[in-house]
Image (cartoon, one colour):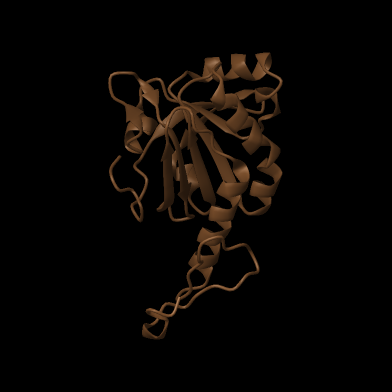
Length: 188
């Protein structure tokens, strides 16, 4: 994976499934809001539904933070609908499920598994200007969880709105931040 931090997302247009409908989604739709791209290998699998269901359980909280979620796999939007209709866990999803059978979005984020046609298990936090602020890729068997993602989003939003401050490890909303300076060198 190329280093995507602080780079703009690349242009794309894709068909997605959301709220019982097929919709078109493009990079232009992201402007002005925080976004999460939640890539996963395939529909109708094992770890993926646990992750997507966890994000679905926290979707309302993400919405309150001004964040839109886009799950992405290389399956089609038709497969997303079938999975949504067939699985109780996936049936909870209210966020946008992007179908990427031509690999455009997956390639743009550099998370296509070469020779497999599947997306890596990857998460990207994108700011309202379309700039990637965080990226994480995990191995096939390592599922992600929404609470960790939400903490990272809150930290990214805090840093964006408080220039000159940074969030230390384990930072939670309301806790002290740091103002990097020569005075802190060797004191932490």
